[in-house]
Length: 263
Image 1 (cartoon, rainbow, N blue to C red):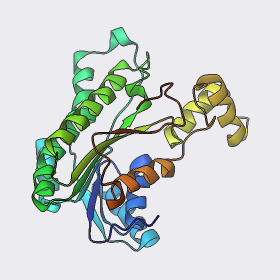
Image 2: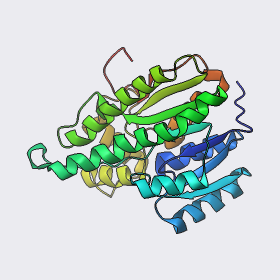
Image 3: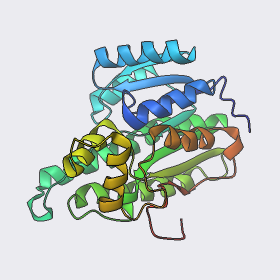
């Protein structure tokens, strides 16, 4: 299977680290011109330089806070059209349910949901006009298995699935596909720190990971954390012409974490 995104421009929000950076790297290696996005210009410039060196791809520096009108305007000045939009930006955090304030609820919905809506509204018309495009959202197993310690996060990721399905209908028959990717427990720096806080610092990482998964994430069928590159593999496929008949879907890269047959 050969994935070729030569001639396509892709924007990955929140792509200076973690899953977003892995996705940007995967798209760049497939030949896409990739826009790296983050709020800090210095960080974006550094990551973009590394990505160019690693992949040889054309990389656009798109420093902007896409949760604000000003940031969106700045982004559109830098990047007026994209062929592939990956709404990866998201925040999470633990909080007892009864202590989550209205402001915190609004912040999670604004960052995790409305930022995606704003960008789809901005870029979807150009995609439909040219008769080709890919819109992707990075959701979470928490959309289905709502964590009691962060129901605001889980609810926002459930809402993102509805946004994706709805805009897939808007793009019906245009050659543009709109999908979600459901990411399971993933190996990022923050998750590794969290895992070690639960199982201790004295174990080698491979063993600590197995203990963490066995004791704290027993639903996983692969019994390990997912690597960001594994999520990027799914995104890169869905961004390609090979996925032309897949739209309106919620595709799982969760290691079997969600105990359900569908989606």
